[in-house]
Amino acid sequence: MQSHSAQREESDRFTAQAHDVYTAELAAARLRGAYPIAVDLFELIGTLGAVALGTWALADGRLTLGGLLAFLAYLGMLYRPIQELGDVVASIFAASAGAERVLELLDSPPGVIEAPHARNLTSVRGRVTLTGVGYHYPGTVPPVLADVTLTLEPGEVVALLGPSGVGKSTVAKLLARLMDPDIGAIRLDGHDLRDLTLDSVRDAVGIVLQETLVLDASVRDNLLLGRAGREAGDDQLREVLTRAGAWDFVAAMPGGLDARVGQKGRSLSGGQRQRLALARALLRDPAVLVLDEPTTGLDADVARRVLPVLVVGRTVLLITHDREVATYADRVVSMVDGKITELPHPEDTASRPCGMVTQ
Image (tube, rainbow, N blue to C red):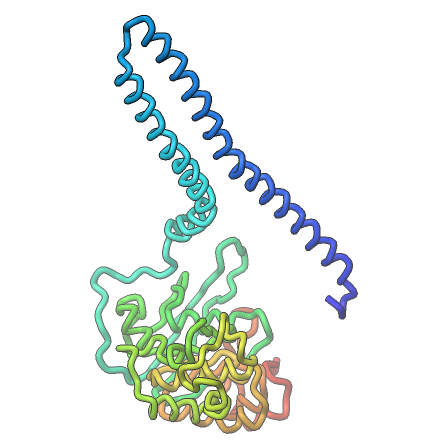
C-alpha cells in the first residue's frame, strides 16, 4: 500500500467496513438486551393479570385458593424456558452464516471421482505418458491445454519451461489427479489414472506446488502429512530435513520437530516453507515427483544442494523458469499456446532465455 500511495484510500475503506460491522453488532446487542427485558415485562403483566383474574374467580367461588396458587407457580415455571429459547434462537442465527458456507461446500460436486472398479497399483516403475491431453477451466472459452503429448521414462528428469499462464501448473495438477483432463489420457506405467484408485495415484505421484501448503501444526505433523500410517522416526525426519536444507532452522526453533509453525506457516519465511514442503516430498519418496517452481524462495546455494537430492532415483517433471534449474534435467521441453515442444539439451539452453522456443 505504501509503494502505491494507497494508505488513505485503504484506511477509509477499512473504516467504512468497520463502521458497518459496528452498526450491525450494536443492533444485535440491542436486540439481545431487549429480549430479556421484554420477557420480564411479559412475566410481570402476566402474573398481575393472573392474580387479578384469579382473585375475581376466587371471590365468585369458581376457583379455590390452592388452584390459584398452583396456577401462579406453573406460570412462573414457564417464563424461564421462554427466556432460554430466545438465547437458543440467537445462537442459531449466529451460526447460520457459517452453516451456509459449510453446506455450500458439502453440496459442491467433487472435481475428481474414483471409478467404481478402480484398481490398486502395487508396483510403480514411473513411466508417465500424456496423450492428446486437453483441459479448460470452467467459465473460460479457450482451453489452457490443447493436444499435449509427452512421455517421461522411468528415472528421467524432464524440465518443462514456458511463460506464465500457459498451463504448466495445470499439467502438474493433472499428473497428481487433482483434476481430470477434458480429452486425452494420462497413463502411469500404461494404466490410465482414471482406472486407478486415488490412493494409488497419490502414493505414486508426489507434487510440490508453488503455493506451499503448511498446516497450523508442528513441523513433525507437517512432514507426516500424506505419509502412509502417519508415522516416521525422529532420525528419519532429521534426515529428510537435512537433505532438504531445512534441519538447521528447524533445530533452532523452540521445540524442534514439535514446534508449531502457525497458521499458513506464518512463523516461517517463504524459503523455509518451501524447504519444509520439499522435505515432506522426500519423506513420501514417490516414484514420480512433480516439482512446480521448486526453487521459489530459495537462494542459489540451497537450490544447488537440494535439487540433486530431489531428482535422483525417480521420474521427475521439473517445472521452472530458471535456466540453471533446467540444467538438472535429462531433457527439456517448452510449453507455448497449450502445446509442448522439444528443446535441445539443458546445457545448450543455458545460453538462451528460459522458456523461449526457437521458431
